[in-house]
Image (cartoon, rainbow over all chains, first blue to last red; front, side):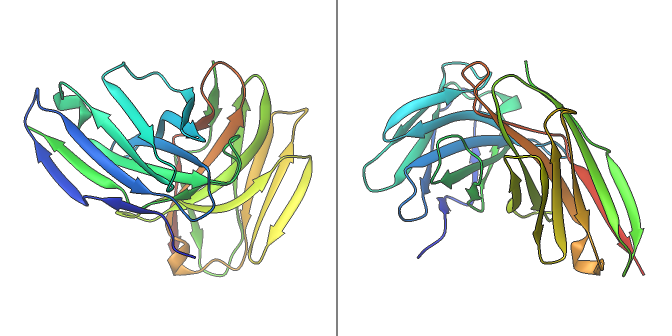
Length: 113
Length: 111
């Protein structure tokens, strides 16, 4: 059983650009959630996908979008990058769409300049 | 909306016991989870409480009182490697959001 993986590890983008971050969930986990974590803060819930449909969303603008695929992989897309988007982006997979027990990937460190 | 409160920092001595409290306000409460995060690392799941009472996993225990909207994480026989940030998180059906994390408690274990 493999854990949760994310790519890339680090990324530097320019303001206004678009970025796609990828996640591979733990085998058998049909729920994936994405989080943004600023330095010294707790993870902020962006959205959740369950069986390839968005199943929950936090207080993030529509330029944050996602996809989940049948093979347990998922994507986070961010358009029109802003400086404040610089953060650690974490995906977490779980068996339960209620998000009770989540297993996190190592994260992607995004820097927007 | 949802909100959680936990102490920002706690210092404890190696070998001792420490308790990290978490109070929450939420609607449609499912349960309270705890995560550990070392500097530069990702959060790691520690425990989950969906019902009132104590859950024990090795040196770590977690408690929930739904009527008091309160929980805590208890770490026993502290080791230096326990120095990390600890987050409580509520899973809920309030609004369209599913999970809300606290701001974290930074635990420093000293010799």
